[in-house]
Image 1 (cartoon, rainbow, N blue to C red):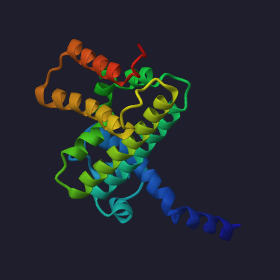
Image 2: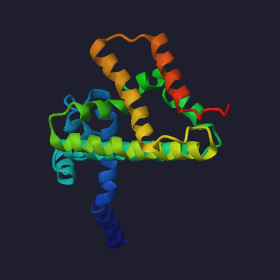
Image 3: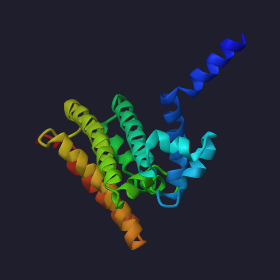
Length: 208
């Protein structure tokens, strides 16, 4: 019995994949709440119940951990978009919900996953910027698949490249946060008008 229990304990300790997953899960709320620069690896380690060296053994550096977090969050966002795209919803109406300014303000406030993308875009670390680009590309590909479904069903205009439109949609969200962060003020009525103009442009033109 004692030998079996000891073997089981060693298996748990040696489960590197599970430990990485646990560390990533603990790091996400820390990075989204405090930002990359202010987050301490010691706080992430404390959440998991391990020492800082264990975190570094798994990810090499704090930047390596942040890159892994970006990969995980973007994978989950892409999976979410895929699930939404499979629903029986008008794709343009779906975009009208996904692109609401209030939703993106929440996503890009402390605690929101958008903070990770903001940090990646402004990072001086090449590895983090590369991870940020991978994350954006992953989300954009998932968005393009949703748009292709809209083109197939006739709600999204078919004379445009879905991936190009996906980048346009993503840039709409990033542009608002750029204005919000650097200007400090937004124009809600104008923002809504811009969103409506984008959605109108995406709709399949009606035959005369």
